[in-house]
Length: 115
Image (cartoon, rainbow, N blue to C red; front, side):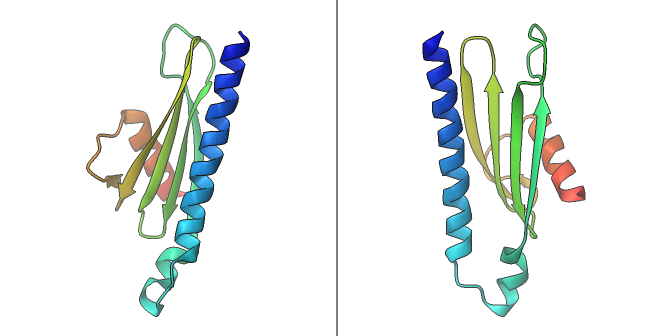
C-alpha cells in the first residue's frame, strides 16, 4: 500500500516537472511581432473522467495546455486500483502531432478550444 502512495506522489511530481518545463520553454522563446500573440496566452483545462467501468469515481484526468494557435500538450493520467500512468502527447492545430488521441483527449481539446 505504501508503494502505491509513493508511485502516486512520484507521478504528481513528474506531472509538475513536465508542465513547468513546457511553460519555461515557451516563455523563454523570443517573440517576434507575428508570434507574440500566439505565445502570450495559454488555454488551460483539466477534465476529470472515469476510463474504467469497474471502478467508481473520476480519479483520472486530462490536463490540456494550448496556445492561441491550438498547439501545445495533453497530459493524461490514468488511475486504477494498482497503478497510475501518465502520458504526454503533443498537439498541433488542435490535433495529435503524429500520435493517436483517445476519445476523452479529443473531447478535452475541443472543450479547451471553446473556453
